[in-house]
Length: 373
Image 1 (spheres, rainbow, N blue to C red):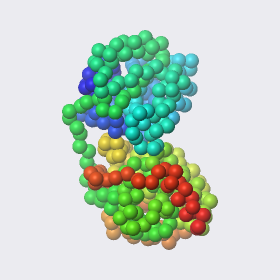
Image 2: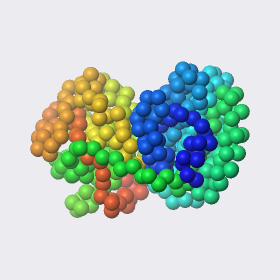
Image 3: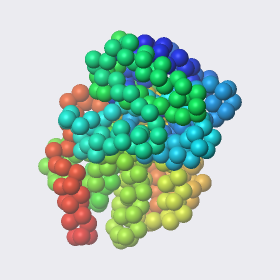
Image 4: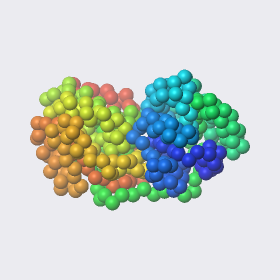
């Protein structure tokens, strides 16, 4: 189905969301049509943020907003969907467009399998009526679904279009770039050169995939690393939990700007605990690159300043390998919580693979290694 036709059927003019690779056609269309525009299109920090922003739009205009997201974000909308949007509370109508990762019967990565199984059930449990769009869905079927949705929305209830893999088409693919010179893979390579045998917690997406391949290329084992393949935004909290319970061991967190934004409150918790053995590295390309490259707001956000305000005793920004190496070595020796933000380009090797160990194997190898420290 052409994404332009879906937008025509929906008939709304305000969209907010968190990008998803399964919704790449939608994301590219919105960027071509609106860019980032507070009147029409906002990429938010997390899906709950989107739902609340959509509620504000409805309160101000009386019109129906659209929230797009990957199905992994359903957990983030449960609270606002149940306690804000629900027709027994404020009855705020929202149209959700949800990319269906891990659909039963289709191969996908381990972090998507269970989420895929419960995607439609969670919507049903929240009282959100849904319609699934696949490659073979006719325009007339989607139109009939939207017609059935209109009285539901008029009663103050929410609805959802659930999008199967490859269901939406858009011919004008957008290429996302920035002016930063350093690649994420090279940045991680410099990080591993300094961390040695220290445990590393890496964030969701390509960063963990690159870390895995760097270890293999170096002839190292993978026991040093916890790869947070799902649960976007929570790597730093995982690293905090480890650091607090291994106070004599340096712990490193390799994070991304989109992940930091998604659950930025974690920085306040880290800063209030101030573990002396934790180094928080934020690789900032101002993009949701793993799912296509759509922009985040991190390009205009002072992350070191936020870290300092949250209680980190040391925080710095670097944009060269010379500065990065200097700060990494200093952080390894420093007996204080540190944050290093690194400017990064958008892009990855086209042949970048995925971890060849299972999530459970990764966990057990990592836990066994922690026991030796």
